[in-house]
Structure formats: C-alpha cells, structure tokens
Image: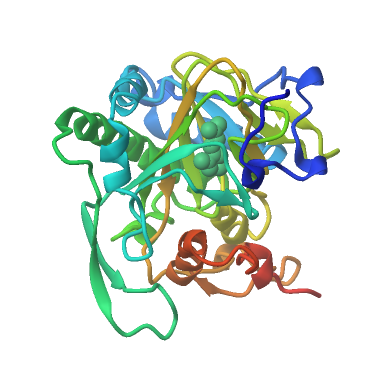
Length: 351
Ligand SMILES: O=C(O)CCC(=O)C(=O)O
Ligand SMILES: [Fe+2]
C-alpha cells in the first residue's frame, strides 16, 4: 500500500509539485557584497553600483542570492545540529499558542493546508510590549517574551548568533534597497526603530509522499524582505512572473537568499513586486532553512513612499498599520480554517 500522510497536509491537485520534471533556475540573480568589505574601494561608489545590481534583481525576480554577506559560515550548521537534537517533549513544552505566538509549531498552515514542517520562531528583541491581540480596538498591552526551550543554552546561543549575523546584513541591505529606489541610504531605517524583526527555523523532515505535500506552500513574504539561509539540500522554488513556472534554486554554498516582501512592493509603489515562492520536500533527506524577517515597528503605517508617488505614478495602495496586518496573519494560525487571511492586495487602490 502507498504510504499515506495526514490528509490536512495534502495539497490541492493544482498546487502539488511536479517532482518528475523539476526545472532549475540556471542564471540565479547573484549579488557579491565583497566591495562593501574591501578597504581599497570608494564605499559610496561601491554602494551605488551594488544598488543598481540589486535594482535589476528585484525588478526582474523579486529575490536574489548574496555571497560575501559577512555572516559566520557555520551559523546555520550550528542551529541545525542543536535543533535536531532537541527532545520532542522539550519542543512541545514551548509550543506556540494564542497567548504567545513565539516558540515551536508543527501545525503551520499556508492557505489553509498544513505545511510539512516544524518551525521555531523567536523575536530579535528578547521582549516586546504590544497590544495583547494586535487588533485595532485592543486597549490592553502585554509583554511578549521569547519562548526558549529550558536548559538548551547551546541551541539558544546558536540561534542568537545566527540572528546577530542576519541583522547586520539586514541593515546593510536596507541602505542598498533605499539607494536602489533612488532614495537616500538612511530613508528606510526609521521604520525599524523598535522593529518587529524575528527569526524562524524551518525544519522539513523527510516526507513519504513529497509529491502530495509542500514544506511551505506557495506564498509571498509579508514583511519588507527576508534573509533566508538554507542547508545543502535543495527545495527552495520561485514562481517566474512571466509564465507562472516553478523554478528550483540550487543551493550555493555560503550564500543567503534575500526575498523581497509585500512591504517593499507597497513602499516602492510596485516598482518591485514580492516573489511567490515555496519549499518542496523530499522522501530521503531532512532539510533545514532559517530566516530573519525585516519587519518594521508595530505602529508603522505602510504606504507607497512619497518620493515614488506622483501625477504619473499615483499611489497603488492605501496605508495600513503594519502591526495589525502582521497580527492578523500571525494569529490566523490559531483560528478557524475557513476564515480568509488578510492579504496586501486588500489594500490595493483599484482604479
Ligand atoms: O525553506 C525555504 O526554502 C523557504 C522558506 C520560506 O519561504 C518561509 O519560511 O517563508
Ligand atoms: Fe517565504
């Protein structure tokens, strides 16, 4: 008898990966950040050049790979080795719930289908005081704290080291992204004072029927952008805008992937579009990826940036409060399966 998996993780027919004809992206959009680390070159010239490359990558693909990113090369491997050793009961003890959305979950959904993944989420800030439910009319604030497994200092340290590296890169990219839109390099930074940046581990166990499920279903990232590191097992795929074709991105050793998100789409008034992507699983190998999300402060109103709006380029979105949007998405994991999840398209101005 064919192996079976949880019905909730079976993707609708049209969303299943076609594993017998995987297509690879042959010319990956690649940015080499070594000029930023070189003592012999003019830094502002180097930034302008990189910004222009980044513009082309984001415009064409909505994502790019980065080499010479400055992060410790063994950061992800350390997380992988410590996460995979965590005892099941320790993970279960720090399961996310409606009161604390940080910690472990094996029940994540994308578009209401269960992902074949175990995740662990933690905030970059160790604690944040925020409205209890993240909802517009919520008057009570609570302190959210990270939910680290007890007595696992090595795991926690590996996670924190990863995040120290990604946050540094995230701020470097913030300058380049601003420059790539013709803005001053510090234009986006104020949105990230008291940010909601967080990191996530995605652990994809081998799946007996990888042709039926997805590690992470097709989605766009809702933040400004994501820095994603993956191990050597392939599985990350992007949807090509022109024809909807799924293309697998081969892992390049010591690179990270930068995925443009919805906020960037809105800020840039659609000069850039966030990329649809997914994670495919396989029957033999476990796979681990980890990311840090560039998420602004709760109070930030996200709208097309003034400099990019004009008579010929009217605003394509009305403003929305990031914290409320984010909360609606985050807490949707604990709500009924049939409630539609908020999308950035809900703020689109239809002409
Ligand atoms: O694991 C991957 O390759 C992609 C993960 C991802 O897109 C996400 O967690 O948002
Ligand atoms: Fe993603």
